[in-house]
Figure 1 (tube, helix red, strand yellow):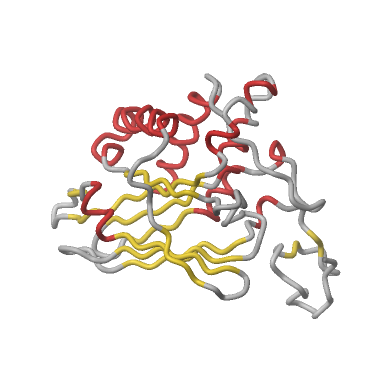
Figure 2 (cartoon, rainbow, N blue to C red):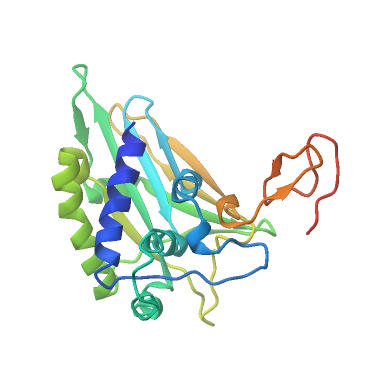
Length: 243
């Protein structure tokens, strides 16, 4: 319920902000990818978000550039020119939204501040070759991204109360020194997110597996069931899937 409330709220907020001029468009990498207007935003969110309610409230959401594009395409009246306006500003980055807090015996919540969550947070990325690197959130973020986050925070607070006030956004650079994207929603990899326990809250570990299935046109197995984009063979009868 918490997860659904957050995603519904933030999607509405993003649509409101983006239709005022914000936009980030995904790059098309393969012919099997869906057009952004055909992607189901709920499926995309399900693949990029995870939560843990063991002795507390913990939620993480990896926000790739495709989310902004999919959200914006829900308003087909927006001119293409507006969609491309801030592509170069946002495309080198991704965000991670995190909330962590503990529950009292009476059901109330005490959420941790941004500095505490940041101290507890560790993020790794494992590429398709098994190479792992630790990702570090930017200490100084671009002014346009800071403005976007400052706009989101009071809206979340107004719509979700204390919980909305305690969603923390961390920004990561997603390009190397040559300008190549390091983590792509369309390519194999695993994002590992760890949050150290504190107080009554236990340690939490989450994995977001890439590529994101919701961004691809599904292939069908002989029995008519959809095959996940990462599968090489149909699990029901072993049929090899087209690449």
